[in-house]
Length: 366
Image 1: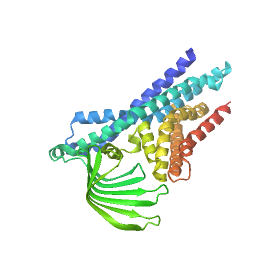
Image 2 (image 1 turned 135 degrees about the vertical axis):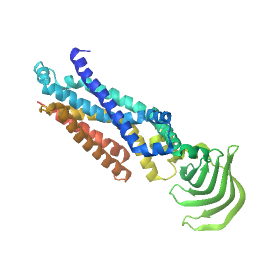
Image 3 (image 1 turned 45 degrees about the vertical axis):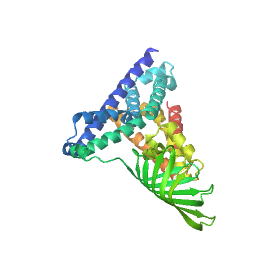
Image 4 (image 1 turned 180 degrees about the vertical axis):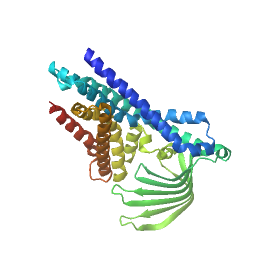
């Protein structure tokens, strides 16, 4: 590695690490102060608090990494520009790309690292945080009065075009109360409705008790008399683990889990749900590269800064650029969820436009 590359890399890495530590410290302090009343009320032990924030580290890092990349890029190159070092580099025949290639490579490495953390550690951390949060909310009284865990108002799109609506599901006993199963054809027309008082999973089979089955024609009218059974065994491929997984939101799933869930729903006809899940899946691929895109955005702005207040001007530009970037990204995601944009376009349009804009600005630098 050349001396110039080491010089730039040392500056931007040290600034990036400093920003990460400052942001994480501020997050913890602000969050503790916002929870202070509940912490004292529930007498939360300090070890549980430490565990909570250590578990939160992967999620916090993923969230603050792009802004830290932007701020460190702006600060480093605006300082070089302010000290006339960029002019000296350009006078010696170095191009803008050669000067900034170390930072771009670093942005690629950080983006890949964020992608790895976001897929491997963040989903598990979110589930662990929910459990720790439940313990913190319980307090001493909650520990004594802890009840059997259950999921309320559970809904799920299953295989064979089935929709499940469950009043209460008990994971520990694989039991569900208040079960409604809707079966549809490929055009989402209702063909059968099953209402059961209770369902139990035993020996790989679902047994439903006090069930009533209604059959429907293509006009949605009931065909024949409803069939009542005191006990019925149904061939349903979904296991209790599949129902338990429904409490996980897409951000709590890995890429493989989310892709598998989308595949299961692909023949259910639930187009809106599938579209939103695909949007979440594509986001997991695209969003980690915000660090690289935002570095490329920061390079031309940092080289345009001519003021003496290098640090303050970098912070100001970072806030404006980051704010506009995330606002436009949020708008595109909203349009995607509303069906106005295809999922892949909704998640990638901000990155593509930001990349094109940054390349345009860099190419027009003097």
